[in-house]
Length: 248
Image 1: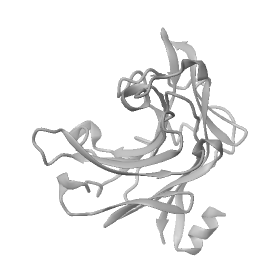
Image 2 (image 1 turned 60 degrees about the vertical axis):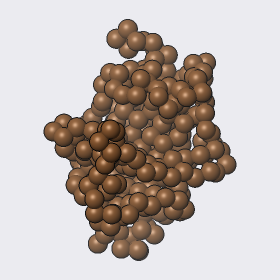
Image 3 (image 1 turned 60 degrees about the horizontal axis):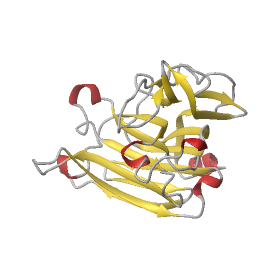
Image 4 (image 1 turned 30 degrees about the vertical axis):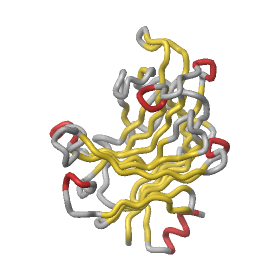
């Protein structure tokens, strides 16, 4: 229904994964981050391990678990489209059910495809959705970019929405990305917007292709702000579909 409404509004699907298959995520669409990647998180990201990332019953399942991977006690997965697909402007829409619990930190986000050349934060980062288990009634959207303050590496602008039990069911998390602004949605509710101020270091370095990341972290600089509860593991992050639209 969501797709048909968007089509009537002048959008068309240009890329999607409906997860209408079983097994590992489609290698034509997804690849993986590997190892301990960022933010002092506790999980080790595995590659091609069905215990951490698989498609079953019409959903992508990303599972964070106590199950040693290369000698590390907590493992999870981070799926990315880098080298497979990237986009400049459009609507990115993901229907997902996030896991709750102290330490849980699922996300849907984007970074510039030039990250390997210019580094972070110059590549830009668009966080379409972040949820942290110690703040269970809020969803967050944020953009990160270079700071105009020479004493700081990066700056950010963000918003959040307070809602009842976002972890209790599937919800649609969306970004509508235009040359003049970024609009963020929870289901059909727009709750945050960033306008293009024309200044590279002041919040809108998002005029270039970005790739998509969907990951489930555990702990880390934000996820562990109020501690972690390893007894909740395993936890599962379910994704019903990922769709990318462009204006007709």
